[in-house]
Image 1: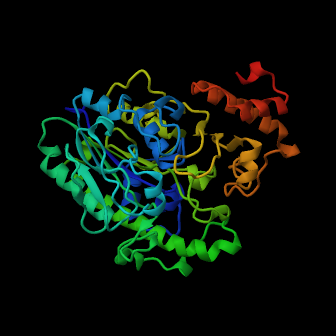
Image 2 (image 1 turned 45 degrees about the vertical axis):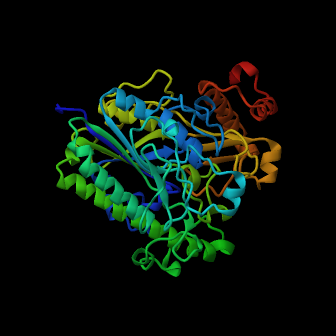
Image 3 (image 1 turned 45 degrees about the horizontal axis):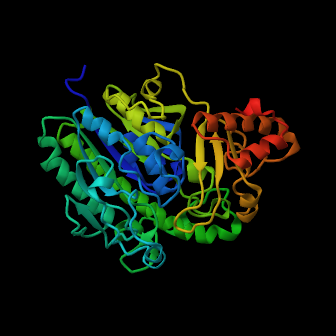
Length: 469
């Protein structure tokens, strides 16, 4: 029996796909510290982003709600200040809460600034009303510049500049805060360290790409990298070049995770701190000829999720139940004995992770609710990821204008690289009909009315409305 509730430490990354860690089988990855964390804790094998882009994912993560409920419908929306978050829940339970790093829920830069200075590093100000209930604050809304990042703190609009490489400096900031403030408190703490890496951004040379410090860049040469087998031949060279920077950034993240884990060991806190490592979404990195995120393919939606709490979370286990990003809040609350708010829609999977309850999810619902405020085009879709299948539906116009990437049916067990799209094929008609019903149920269960393109597809399949309600 623990004398007090465990501390909670979130280490969050941006653009890190599940496949890019050594513990998840990537031959290119150099992630000894994350592999150590996985060996000491539990890897959630089937964790998925409920909305594969920064801002909406973060809103769902913090509120435990789907995005048509939490008020952040599209990329570029603000998190409404009246929304209750995990920070409010943990504060109410007696925790000191703090946040370091990227926030991206209070964007104030206008579109011209976004288009012309997206790597300026100066979108640092987050008003205290827009900080999601966190008390101690050392964060910025958006930077995308790894050597010119500013953050806000306290009540002042005055910027504070990070020195050196952003990921290293954010880790410095977290370690300083934890050493000087958090461990001096006579109460448990909940701390978030939110890395912007390995999101692409500006490097020290003023060029945009995947920048990492020279020592980490030197670890990876493009021609040595093994591309995923779903990277087309005509983009392999480009994908390898980008991947060299990407894996260098991941290796640097791993180095800094090691610093955090060593600090916990040195301060006698490892046994009483729930460490949770995860990402908001993945990165296509040339798979299917695509880059970035957005699409419902595995490289975009499948995220790493590792939990460690000695004596509570099983060590060396791979949990095979489905996990949505909106489950992370209630699951952490479950491990820490913190009550959640009644409006939370995510599932507490703490007992399931420990093996004392079955797998509670039959699917993860993935949303894209409309046009991003950053002029990325309009491609609404709804998708489900089950243990074996990915099924995604969009309007006909959306599908045609985006190369068919939003109407898919993949058998991930038989086709893990998702090379054979079964959508609309005769041999998969019964499977597609069944998955369509499951998608409709998932949408209804989320509290959303069926979008018109889903209803129209129901008619196409000859499904009666009652079956899809």
